[in-house]
Length: 129
Image 1 (cartoon, rainbow, N blue to C red):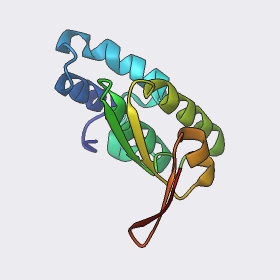
Image 2: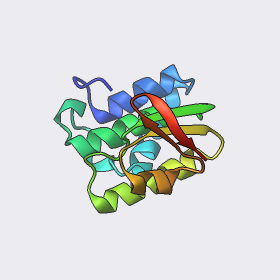
Image 3: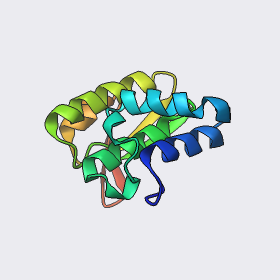
Image 4: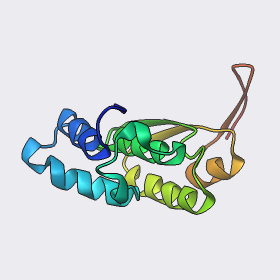
């Protein structure tokens, strides 16, 4: 995420970098902003967003282009409870054809997004399943 440009410009830039035709980048930005419930911030500088909305934006940027592997770190930290559940639903929908690797301290987030879980202590796997 580039804090000095708007949410829309961020989405458009990353969309083009991930293969979207520049002529369709505006429509793509509107679609992703709607999916991640940040449409009202399209013309806001990314650096001026709240912490939760920054999380939504960077999650959207990470998931664009249907990558085969998606890495998310504390994807819903700082997001209010209602928006967190909406975000998890969107992540599940957008990652159907991808391997999703999430790091979190939240058991609720792990249960909402995970199909297999690993527990690490001091950098070593203690449990996997």
